[in-house]
Image (cartoon, rainbow, N blue to C red; front, side):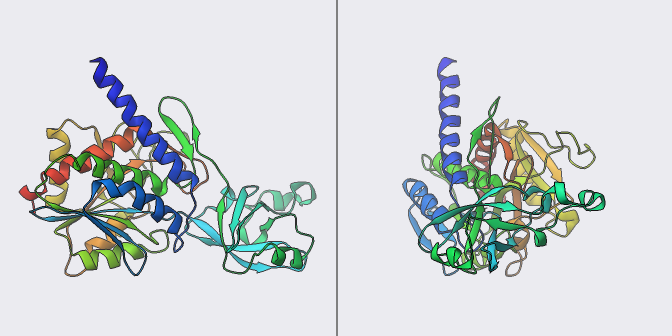
Length: 362
């Protein structure tokens, strides 16, 4: 019994170290190179071959006889791009991905130039000089800017900043209590960690399947990488590993989400009110049966929110059976997302066990 407890702790520690590394790294949609480099290094011991396709997806294959199973986890995070620099040296930006404007104000950020990283803060008009009606309104992104301490436009140019440079939030990974942790970009670095953990588990076993792990690009701006990767791979079945919205904190009713952190992997039934994916009965049965047979904690999700790579993979070619296994994540699309490390572990175990039985379903 002592060995089991010790093994679980060690496993969660490995997951935590990897999540910290990936969360603290930076890479918005279309600029995933840093994340891809980390994933490539971490994935190498567990697969037979690996390459980067024309769009930037990292495709890693573990050969085997049986159906081809594609596992997709997107590498990109939401962020910003420089769009205008005014004469006083203030930098205006556009959003890359789905931000809620209220979360942006007064955040520290990093502008990634060709030469170096430049630090700044997001500012706007101080409330002290606002009229009463202004203070009651949400401050929108159009009135925000990045302040790097420049005296004028020339200062900004000397720092190497130009239109099109990417911007990410300057936020570091932090432990909380009870295996809860917080950081930026858990959507979807938590999913990437779970995919890596799956590969680690299956590297020690012979599996009746060809497994293709894909770190996809540009998910946050239209599920783009998954579309091209799935077309090239043409798998028999695909699973998207991502994050999803729980209903276990103030401000959200259980009717909106029954999911809870620490209660296991989340199996998607449908998302985006059906505009995303409605998982076919065979794929859903495969995942639920696997979880029950292997006594892996799981939750079911019918979501009205966003969609994942599974939605676009499902519609590729003449249709690819696709499902989703997600990690419940509080405060999604903010700089302070929160996950429970045990859910990442459950997600990996369910994915691995499902792959092992895929030949019985596909």
